[in-house]
Amino acid sequence: MRAGALEEYASKVDGQRAAAPSCDPKAFPLSLARTGEQLRIAAFLTGKGLGKRLGDLGLHKGSVIQILHRERSGASVVVHDTNRVAIGASVAQMISVTLCENKTNPDCNSCEKA
Image 1 (cartoon, rainbow, N blue to C red):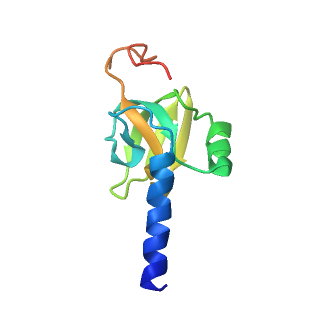
Image 2: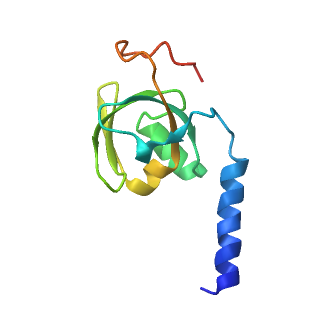
């Protein structure tokens, strides 16, 4: 790939992420979360197809999830309700989450509802 095309692609990707609905300044990618943390999904920075597939798996904006297992690459296994979902590193990078502040409440009602 020529250098100009690579720079053009990088600017498009950055522009898409910047144009994505900003949810919370405290949001970060799921791939950076630690094992055992309870999180609320703030946004999906994906296309319609992947967003629909994640929704079919029970992961929606505002859902509370917990990291069951995380690989060094960023791939994770998350728990939502009673479902376990394995998420690859590249997809985990596209899911924006926030920390739940009340660790004792499984419903995480202290988090701001989306």
